[in-house]
Amino acid sequence: MVAIMERRTVYLIVLSVIALQSSTASVSANDDTVNTDPYMAYMACEGTYGFGSCVAYARHAGAEIYTAQNEHSRILEHRNYGDGILLVEPASKIRDAKWIRTYTVIVTKKNGGGSGQSHFGWVHRADVIINTDFRQVVGCWPLKSAVTPEEPFEEVSIGVGFNTSGLAGDPYPDERVRKDYGLQHTYYADGVFFIRHERYVNRTYGVNGTIDYSTRTAKYSGSIAFKELEWFSPDDLKECKQIPIVADIPAPTPKEFAPNRN
Image 1 (cartoon, rainbow, N blue to C red):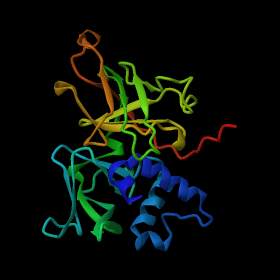
Image 2: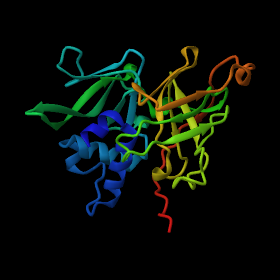
Image 3: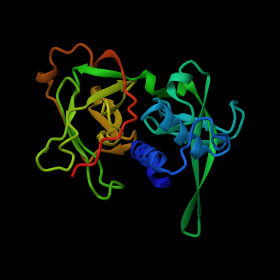
Image 4: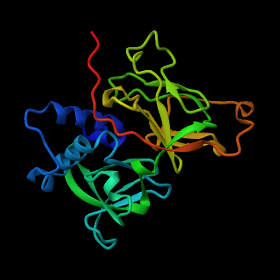
């Protein structure tokens, strides 16, 4: 799970919320464990406030995670542009905060192996993009299609196709198990994007990354090369004065799980 958290934040969120909702003992934001266990605090946040509420992304210059609300405190780790950062308080409550508390796992390598230790950390609000910063793409979206790397999705890549309005869907709906995922909107803020299902936690495509049309650069989860990328042609975007265009429509934070198909 540590490797997943480092490289696939959205995938970890889904696993965490599923674990939370399927556990025999419900964890709430008022449970004493959330004050002492960083992982349980994150799970309670995501389970209470909805999918995506408790994740942030590092801005262009990256983000330092400190042990305290003090730049002179010890730095736990550095997150690069677009990297996911898990939070223990929802975006709706921290949008105007100066510091934001995080859930961080520090990996210690020893004798060829590794172990992770959970920590509470602190990050500058100015260094991250949170859920309430994102807005829905409605035009001039430059990516035509993208395919994620295979690992760690059980050696299965995720492929999505877009239209210029930012609607994303499975390019092979008759051949994939995700044919019932339908079309999903893209949300964007300060060079970072993700695709999200409006209603179901377990129906999101789980594709996120950074994008810069001026250099034709897009990275999965911030720093990982997409397996495949295709851009719309200049002719497709010739009327665009801004790329992309967003509307004042915030990103959803779904809590519901779609039933399993027979």
